[in-house]
Image 1: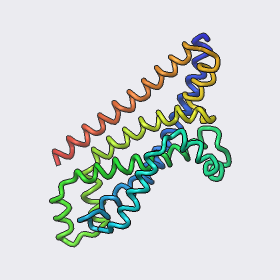
Image 2 (image 1 turned 60 degrees about the vertical axis):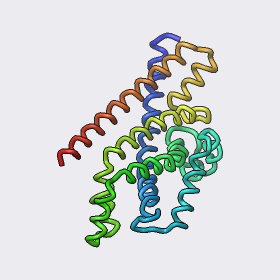
Image 3 (image 1 turned 90 degrees about the vertical axis):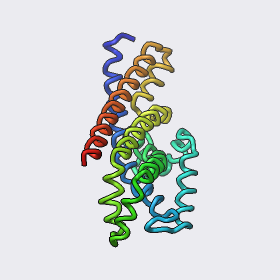
Length: 222
């Protein structure tokens, strides 16, 4: 396969991959952020201490995280079809990608929030601050660099997930690698998809690291 033949396939595959990953990351953040914060608030000593709820949430998150994504992808075909109308294509893949990543991101959020200085939390509680004040004025601002790092990690994880989604018609670079590389024995095209994936991951990691350093500097200055 010549470069002129590979280029449009790689371009379309990259576009589909980024489309799936960026939208599923947005859904993951919207779903995983409150779950992660709730895991902290309902734990022992939290402002909303509720051990039974905390245990149930923890079990759900742990079970969801333990499922291999390729199995989850196939198991969620009926759900994906019900939500989107089809289980094939980049739009359909947003559903299983987000569902698979939400518990992963929730644990990262929990870890980031637990790193916040407990003295600040106690100060807000002693002044009668409620949950909105604690979350909006202390937990999220103080944990922001770690949260951005968590989003970066999730983005990169979802790129790997999206490559697996190509096995069930998810489009993207994974699908292109299977269809035009593996099935047609085009080793050159397979290597090209690997290079593109490495480049995409590297760019995302550099942007994420830069944002974390900038936020950390601002936090220290403040």
